[in-house]
Length: 230
Image: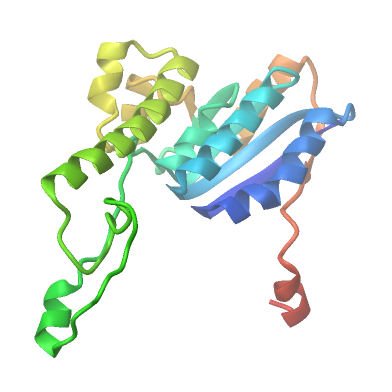
């Protein structure tokens, strides 16, 4: 038996989720895999992909230990994923948290006005162009979109609150999008330990009852990258 280790780096996207799906399925179902280690260096990304990966990690954790190690940054959607782990450790110079939701839409109407371009929009449905870059949203549209974002935010917040066993009043304080140092994250129950990969692995061995060899695995690159040799 052995411990499977993989790295989650860069922006969390649905393509990234699809690339990790075979790895997570293998880790969950292969009897020779004693546990899973995730090494994080990601500032987050797509909420849907983050939730899907979080749910997969939580499912694996019910069968075998899953440990997360933060080596750089583990923020926003990346932290959501890590919250599904059995335990989270961090290097003492990493950054953790950013529990919140953000959506940015460019507004280019002033630029179009300046160069004399006018957009003609044809739509069926009152809100069909609600996120248009060509006009300012109405107060009603802003309120509607904020309700959408708040629903996503509550799912993220509640997932972390439940998995990390954080009281609701404390969760409200730390789920405002802020970044924490490892010592601050420890105080707020966002991580379980500060140290090196070796010290985390020693803890994992204790949980497993013995030492195992570690095998590293990365997602298969897209065929175009393999074709180009990049």
